[in-house]
Amino acid sequence: MIEEFKNNFIVQVIKEDLASGKHDKVITRFPPEPNGLLHIGHTKSICFNFAVAKAYGGRCHLRFDDTNPEKESDEYVQAIKEDIQWLGFDWGEHLYFASDYFDQLYEYAVQLIKLGKAYVEDLSFEQMREYRGDLKKPGKNSPFRDRTIEENLELFEKMKAGEFEEGSRCLRAKIDMSSPNINMRDPVIYRIKKAHHHRTKDKWVIYPMYDFTHGLSDMLEGITHSLCSLEFQDHRPLYDWFLDELKTPCHPQQIEFAKLNLEYVLLSKRNLLRMINEGIVSGWDDPRLLTIKGMRRRGYTPNGIRHFCDSIGMTKKESSIAMSTLEYSIRSDLENTCPRAFGVVRPLKVVITNWDEQKVQDIECAYHPKDESFGTRSVPMTREIYIERDDFMLDAPKKFFRLRPEGYVRLKFGYVIQCEEVIQDEQGEVLELRCRYFPETFAGARPEGFPKVKGIINWVSASHGVKVETRLYDRLFTVPTPGKDVEKALSEWLNPNSLEVVSSYVEPALANFKVGERIQFER
Ligand code: ATP
Ligand code: MG
Image 1: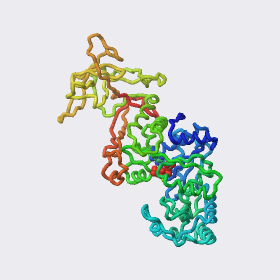
Image 2: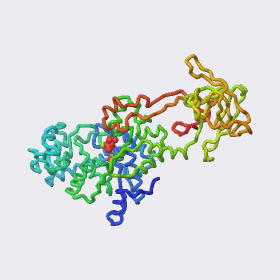
Image 3: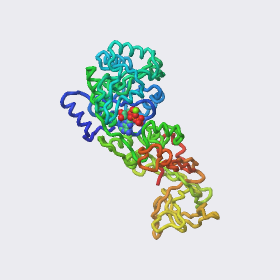
Image 4: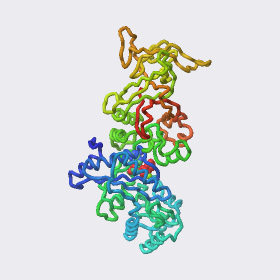
């Protein structure tokens, strides 16, 4: 678990609040909307929220922000919980749903009406947009803005009772139609939606909007620091306005940070869902997606992902992180935690002509080059083996240290072999190699006068190896910033070779590994 914090601007605020006595502990929350699964961007927020709360003696809540019933589902809720646990975080008993607060939120809306701070709007959404103005032009007041409190209470009650059609009315906060901040121009706080909700079922036909729901939910849970991404910066005055007008007993502080963007990928659940629906990828767990499920299937480790999130830090400036930064974190973790074994991805058959046809030599090989605790397994050496196609070259340049006609190479953990004959088809395609081995060179031995052999290659017994399907994944897009133009990304910038399926061989011990266990091939 990452508990040491680089002193970023959020940690600074937290430290000051603890030092000044404003708070005696830190309570954060991670607030996913269950309208899709989590991706690497979310992990930045998850890791920070959970780890910072823990480091400063507090806790982090998991709260589902479920105010859009049509797009949300219980399957997403379950999958998101599973993903956060897999990442290594625990919300304990602090699992919440915004929908649990619907009754209270309704009461707060009524209170705003009573304060003369909210009104029922009859304009259509199109009309409201016209009235809203834009960055250059102030908005103008709705003709329904000055309804009496009594009339508003009555109409809002009727909205709740389902007496009006969707889109015919809504409840708006009464703030300022000429505010330079468009979010403050009488934002909608409740809309009519005759939709079934995965938790509240058919109880509600009106649903609160995100901005209204979010700050009040934070307040109800006693959140101290409400961390969110930069696009909510302009919503902060509204976040504060609701809490101030309602004179709530506590007032969480919203702090924004830059979203994580990575090169060569599209994040955002909306884009991911589109790629799944259009069949560009096979599902939320497609290893080419940087969803938590996809990364998990790809062999990424929770520890490696957490390390990555820690390494990129927290800033207020948007940037795009190189893929290699993520890969470095994952590799560093796999390096120490993952056994090595033999697999030949693109096999080329080699017959060892001076090896007896019946002879099988079991070679004891370590699973890890540095860490003995991984143990060993025996790898069978036989007359026919496979080597990697790339490890042989017909017209090899001088610096090529693996196998060439007449050349020598060492089989890892085994013997030096020499290529005596190359069997090709009519097109010149190499079909098979005939080699001989040198019994006196076993396991690194080099008899006096024997040529120096630089290259060491991996191999698998042809008769004892297990045939497997290998899926080779490459990046999904050909440009570093596919998010710049999503339409183009999905039509023109897709990498046609992002998935290659080949037939391979692995050593027999791998047949005993379970699905989900990680192995690195010797290379
Ligand atoms: P998406 O566009 O993928 O749907 P979202 O922000 O709408 O993202 P939510 O489920 O609403 O998804 O987000 C939950 C939390 O995750 C929010 O606090 C949000 O700020 C944070 N988050 C989402 N994407 C990123 C990202 N790329 N980097 C950091 N935090 C993110
Ligand atoms: Mg969202």
